[in-house]
Length: 253
Ligand code: NDP
Image (cartoon, rainbow, N blue to C red; front, side):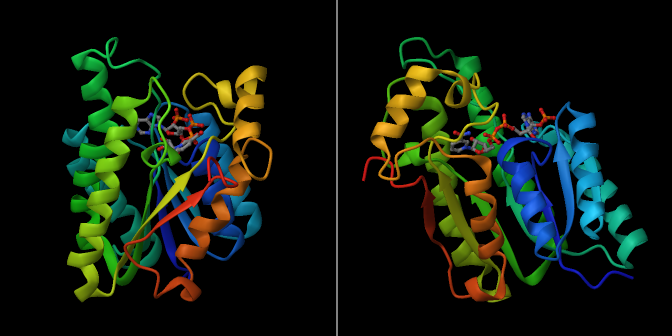
């Protein structure tokens, strides 16, 4: 039976979540990852993690739909019991998310609710649902955004929900301290993934703008972020709690 710690990474099939899952595995952690619709990409991550020598399993979950969380809880409890002999895991990384580029004037109630559900309500209630399975001394890492510190037009609904998740994270730290569980925020700057319209990767003008606004002079890559999440899950970060770590290469400092 595996003695590795176990991480659950939402949205681990692509982009930042994929790199977090891979990085955690490279440092000796087994990984449960979720995906929304891209099963093939998720299964590829599972294969890559198994090549490293860690266990991995992918589950489909729409993290914006809290009605699915009861079944997800049962599914992963069953998996953990079968594979590990108990239903506990160690690190919860709430990463899954989608973007929205619309001005305040253009944002509809449906747009707003979509951002609310995936970036705040889903994170809040998935965490609540999974807390009984999270080991004491476990770790929670919630993924926010540089956009809670600095503002660009057309990200108000998205960034507001990330701001809410940052407040939630501090409350998690406060309430879970008695179980020695830490909760921290990783706030990436602009990263070249499929996120939003993929423009951080594909739009030359936007990339130049980001590079100019970043002290280290380039757009971020997924590989810039995964190691920071792994650090927060490591023994070395045991005294880091209720903190927001921005991982942006020094954007707009
Ligand atoms: P990607 O678009 O590359 O990946 C998104 C991931 O989330 C995929 O694994 C996708 O699954 C999953 N996902 C999408 N919708 C849902 C849903 N409804 N339910 C469950 N899972 C879903 O995005 P990034 O990796 O760039 O973003 C990851 C996180 O980082 C997000 O929270 C984002 O807000 C945040 N972030 C991103 C930044 C950036 O510039 N890229 C900057 C700051 C923060 P599937 O593959 O099945 O579609």
